[in-house]
Amino acid sequence: MNQGILHDSYASDIHRMCAELAILSRTEYGVRVNGRCLSIDVAAWIANRFVAIEIETTVHHIDKTIAKVCMAGAELWIVVPTRKLRGQMRNKLRRLDLYTDNGRFKLLLQSQVEQEFANSLSQSTPANR
Image (cartoon, rainbow, N blue to C red; front, side, top):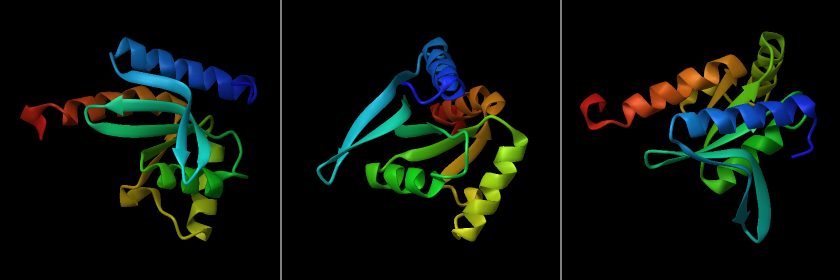
């Protein structure tokens, strides 16, 4: 992975959570789009959904991250380490006219990821649809 200790630690933690919940996942998952290979930090398959989980430790590349995942046709979860960074990320997304409440992507703290997995799994069972 080699994108920094915090980034790599989060990717490993999320991959481990997937394994514990019996969710198929891969780290540094390559997707070929328009002849280019794009790398997703953690790819997860929840029921019939392809979820790209991107760990962001700064706001600098969020526009490229969103574009990359949209091209791959995945649902996007952006995971950040702190509330401060989450606020900065929301502000930058608003300036780009992108909003997390539109259903295209989620902006999560690392501590919220496991609950999001649980929510997604419960929604995928026939009794909860």
